[in-house]
Image (cartoon, rainbow, N blue to C red):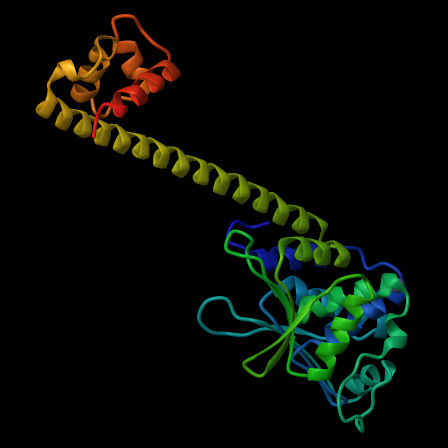
Length: 300
Ligand SMILES: [Zn+2]
């Protein structure tokens, strides 16, 4: 996998390297690609993709099922041109009607006969994801979606997912109907279902690393918060003791507390442990704490 490849491209490249498998699944995967590509009509089928592997997968599936090998054309232009695959005329009509569609249908629905076996439902979703799907890099967030301009088709895809125990959400965005997943566990589940197991593993690996990093950050923020809080407490104690000393003198404090009284005033930022070590007869942290509480009872 290239360093500059997006996570989305990585998942697709992985899927395109899977063996073609049983004819039932090859058919279902190709059907998924068709329904979610740029155009699936009886006179024209048109796939546009940023990923060359997806274009090749489409061509290979088409060749193995229909002995048609459409040409792949890369768009010219700035940067990386997208890959186009198109089929027209009788070839398009043959494929269109093979899947049980005809030009009189008002809206495009999933032909459920093609996706009855569970293996085929997974393959179908793989195909749909290859042409209509994308996933966010787990380092920046968790979002996987399959988009289509066709409302009923989007609902049907969600039903196929639901039949595999997945629970996608729906949204509309810029004229597109989106079926999506928003949690790392659901995305992992979906990727595993469609066969992108290494990508699913990578996603969870990134998530674990992120969680560890977040926890470490929280802990260190918490530490420095506690340290500054205890420094503030020490400064306040020192001021309060100094006020009492100014008014009432050293003799106001019992003899056995006086050494610590002076140490605190002179070392307002010292921790309890440090104060304990400064005493002529060193005291533990809790011993210092106990004595300081008594000292504070003599202040006002
Ligand atoms: Zn199958």
